Amino acid sequence: MEFLWGVLADAVEVLSRAGPELWMVVALTLAVSAASTGIGVLLGVPLGAALALGRFRGRGVLRLAVSVGMGFPPVLAGLLLLLVFWRSGPLGGLGLIFTPTAMVIAQVVLATPVAAGVVSGSIRGLGMVPMEQLAALRLGRVARGMVAVREARAGVATAVAASFGRVVAEVGAVLVVGGNIVGETRVLTTLIVEESRQARFGAAVAAGAVLLVIALVVNVAVGRLGGDGP
Amino acid sequence: MGGRSWLTAVLAAGLAAGALGGCSPDETRVTVVAGTTLVDGKLLERVAADYEAQRPDVRLSVVGAPTARALALAEAGSADVTVTHDPSLEERFISEGRAELAVEVFSSRFILAGPRRGSASLGGVSAVEAFKRIAEQGHLFVSRADGSGTHQVEKEIWDRAGLDPTSREWYVETRQGMGLTLQVASQREAFVLVELSVFLTAEETTGLVDAALDPVGLDNSYRAMAVKGSPVTDESLAFVEWLGSQRGREAVRRANLELYGVQIFEP
Image (cartoon, rainbow over all chains, first blue to last red; front, top):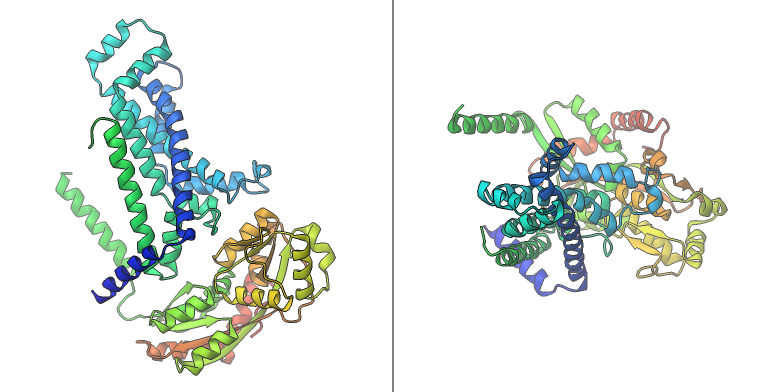
């Protein structure tokens, strides 16, 4: 127990002395997670609505892709993008490897299927009667989708929370494509990995506490916006 | 299968995996904390496997950490053996009476790696002069900046050049191991001080070249130490003695040949 108390005391001290270096990590964590959640939701919501309402060729394949995507191992996504963005790889010319942009792209890949899956599920969860009403409205495809998404707005809020939760807590993909470089691509999760590896447990726990607070605040806030919590 | 039997099956699988992964009771585990350069270059892994083949009762767990950290871990009782490359830190560790046994085991050398274009003009130049030119041109330079032996050597070269590159915009600090730092240098077409075996292992993917500096002052000597107060002192002593012995040296030479085709770590 003495050991654990010691770690905790270290963590408190690290937090009380936290300087610009930690805040930079926090800022980058928020920026990367918010950007990737935003893009992921913008792509995922229409995709989810189309999967729930649309009748089009390739829908089965898309549905499967979303299911696979929701459970896609982040570190594998990171590896695949590393190969694509490696200087001598197919998109190496863009110079994106080990940059925050590459981290956002990796997380969009992880967030989009989650947003699509949640939204699709909650639109289908509206049940038969609203669906029949929707059909009776004789609207165009896009308008029908927009009405459905509005009806399922609690699901959209859940999609935002789930996407943000996935990306903010994710370490494998951002570590591989970002490189965890100090002052450039280090985020809270990769900071925790590094501090634990170096046995600086107090600093690791301090970063973990900040990460937890961010995850909780965002989840509660989004739950409020969507009109209901879990 | 009902819910409960699934749970039982998962638990059983977990336990089986645990048993397979764990240490069998007649094996003694010795934790060897070594510089990340050495670990990333794979030499120690190969040599350790050789030792385990001769001593089936011992299992060596090789963990990479920058030298300063490795010695701190040893002080904290988390390492039984260290293999590090920062003479001044090691001498302090020894003078504080923390080493049961210290042996210089092998040495390789550092090189300056960089993009083909920038490297061409540095052939035969001293490290100090090369660093001065890099700073003058403001060419990107990637540093370990992690208290490793490699970082220590790099800092000494900057010192001798009378320069302080930290906080310059062309100076990138990764604060991480050699492998990742080399990757970052490769992707940014930057210069980096790197141990030769790590460079050669990754040469094809990095696209960087050896600037072929004058090698004076760039040697990289490793010292193995059995940490005093380790619960497995007998086994750690035996391993460190073996590393310095004739058989250990042969194992190092063999590992060199298998891994790199040439002798990089000279016993």
